Length: 440
Image (cartoon, rainbow, N blue to C red):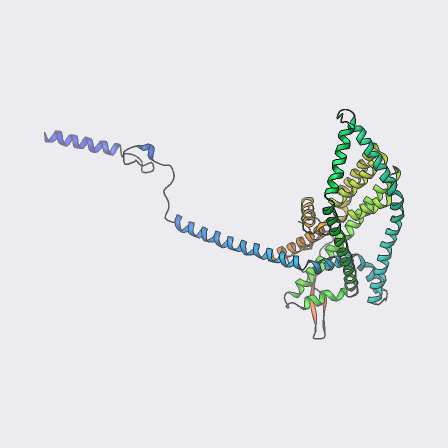
């Protein structure tokens, strides 16, 4: 009996050794149901502290982002309040980039700074006035003819709507025209208010233009003194960076004006020749509009081309308008795919998407003026971003391609910027990464 009991216990013991039970990884529910066991791992001892550290890091980063956003909003608000002052300054700088090369030429040949600046500025105004004087007679002579042609075109459209496939009766078309006239009459007060607002905007624009021209005169007269003065207002370590960044931003503005002027001239020349061959009226005004439209990249060319096609449609008919459209598209494709890469190179390059966004943002914030200034402002932001990035990477962006670095020297009587040689010049055809201005 004892042997049998011992035998049974021994059997149970060996069975327990052969079947240790459910795996600790799977576990078993209290009621013995293995389906209630989850496959998720058990929490580690460091999960809680790591979660708190991650939340603390996220909270700090969120607070920093909020502070940055608040700073951007405050800066935008301040710039908006100072826009009446900033706009003439920006326009004056752009005018100065155009007027400085001839002024520098005269100064190098012994002309006094004030006289050279005054002569160049007056010559530029005379040139612009001459262009307006040359355009005005042709516009005055042909506007009346275009109005008559537009009236005839509207009559043709009315006859076309009266026939198939629309088959609209003359009464319906006349009623639509009467409704449009009544709508204009009912909104006459709003239209008058908009016209008054437009006249006020034109007056403000003329005032800003006069201020910009006066500032441009002082910029080109005292231009070489600005960078030393600005650099002298900073510390010893910051002065070389201020001088280098000032030179880079000036070079970027000058590069933008030169490139867009060349692009606008090529577009205006070939589109004007096409319009002249097709006997489209207002050839010279449309060519001038195309030239100035080039200073609002992509959008300006589109608007100028649309005006050319519209006038060709009104004056010469659908076939001529279609030919003008083809000419505009071909010229713009050649300009965008052949001319732009040649004249831009590595020095100034903004992606087309960045250009469109800059023009759109500038236009929404400040109208036509903002659309005009959007791209150069975006280019300057890109220059500053590149400079800061290269400085953080230790690439010494203040050192130019010729191996020189700007230094501010002088005493209590005045300061000047000199270039000191620090490295060997970069081989021709290769550039320092920090010298790529304006591109993203």
